[in-house]
Length: 335
Image (cartoon, rainbow, N blue to C red; front, side, top):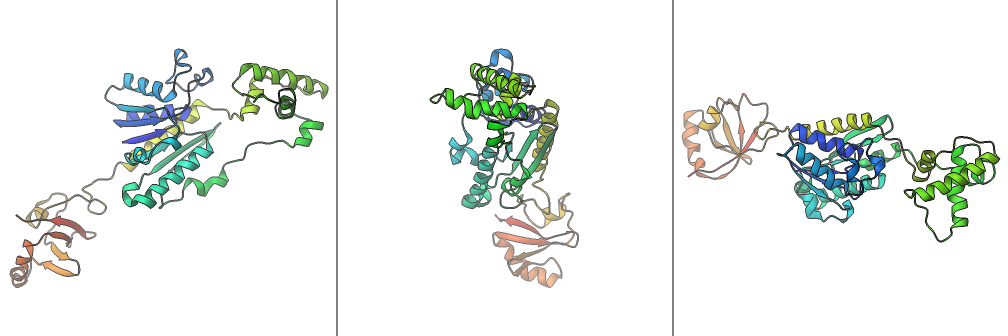
């Protein structure tokens, strides 16, 4: 079972890829609702979905296209979900555009390992995009470098000196910042500026344009004004598609471990003849040891006769064989 955090531009691509790759049990969590500005790149949504929860609409779309996929939506903040919620997943994929949220889930998954050991180990695949740039990385909690380790690689929010925007603006962004940071609080001291409110943005455009004209500055537009106020970074669909593909590929790699692998597998097996007859193990003359003591030798005959009574014991044994690249641990029991 896999958890996808975020059902925006990157999250939509990840959900589609997981369903097409063969993942059959998916959960998706997102606290946002669909806005009309999402429709140009978040392809799981349609015009009549505006205002509805992103997670629910995305899950409905995937179910219609892939009926065999079980996908469960959650409209909530990741910080509000209980520990039991995260413990049920084998891995977590993040399609978030918030540094704060990514830092929180990174720290929380590490805390699960600290409190639950191996049972709390949940690999995290973090994807992020910014314009034509993007990255996908795997975080193995308490093993590999985590999201916090690379925090310095993320650029800080663009800011402008207050003296510049107040006295000597040179760019259209300076005029917009003046209107939002200085003029709005002066005119509306009791009203909070809402970057999603068209009336608020239109007011800022008018005030910023007036100031720009005084300083012979051009380029004030509605989209630029909203972008400066909300710190909007251009989202490009092709970048989201590439990074989502990389995230899905990493998720698939993590699930390719074979339980029958002689080196890293933990599948239980039975004993001696079955070990020798096993087409995967291909042993010739296995020797069994228990702790630091030898349990059973197949050769020479004298040692075989002496150690055979030990086979009535039930325990975890170590198997060595000339054909094995490493030792093999098996749990045996005899009727």
